[in-house]
Image 1 (tube, rainbow, N blue to C red):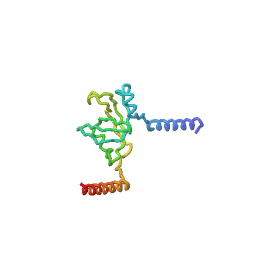
Image 2 (spheres, rainbow, N blue to C red):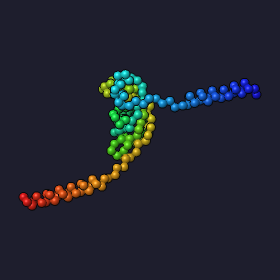
Image 3 (tube, rainbow, N blue to C red):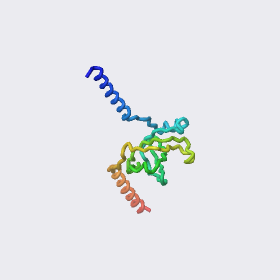
Image 4 (cartoon, rainbow, N blue to C red):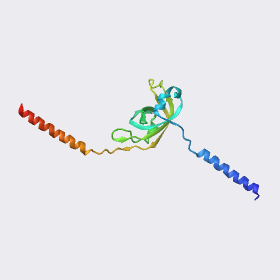
Amino acid sequence: MSKSRIAYSVLRIAFVIVVAILFTANCYAVVWSSNELIEKAKELNGRKLNYRGELVTTILNRGEYSWINLSDNFNAIGVWCKSSLLTGVKFAGDYKNRGDTIEVNGIFNRACSIHNGELDIHADTVKIVKKGYPVVRRMDLKRINSAAALFVFTILTVIVFRKRL
């Protein structure tokens, strides 16, 4: 093989590798915060965007579509999506559970004409970024002892003052 033919083959392989990397690379889109969505609601109205948050409360099933509320620890944003997109969701955040962290991609509405002027996102895709889990809360022995002592003190006070009357 000649040097030019080897160089051509190497160049061709390099080109194929670069094209493969470009087409298979993950393209990360901007994930907007709830504060940004609220502050820039006018300019973002009608735009397709990404939003990520913890699922709080429960999934409000409305047949083919469902409502979910996603909180990014600042505000909760309502998301309207197909119910079929939520099949993998297991945990909604409440006192006993940490909710699934979900990223949605969809159309942002400053005042949705379909949903009585509510600020919402109509999601096309729903992706579970992090699974939720049950929260185990330990009982604080100091609080239990304080409550028991207060209870005993109250009972004794009632007994003492009852006899004086």
